[in-house]
Image (cartoon, rainbow, N blue to C red; front, side, top):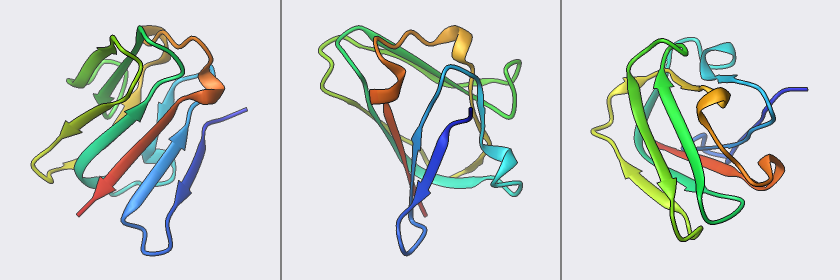
Amino acid sequence: MSATETYNASRSFLTVIPDAEDWDSQLNNPNGLRVWSILVFPSAAGDQICLKDESDTGPTIFKAVDVEGRGLLIRLPANIIFPYMDYSECTFDDVTKVRITFHMA
């Protein structure tokens, strides 16, 4: 099983539904993503997400806990990144309910 990736018609938004494994954006986006912002919709209050750049040993793009469970918005300067979700550093109440949406330039 692997994460589900869905683009909108203009390919300006990529929504990822993770599974219980690491997610590597480079598999389907080898040239990276030029990202303006990332919206994280958790499955519950207290969910933690960790996105790194390129691999599980790459620099951290962000690591955050959604204390209230209402969602997180992370703004980026539209640099090209290679998001990698290190599942071992994430804690989701129900991974099938998590949504990560990348808004691309």
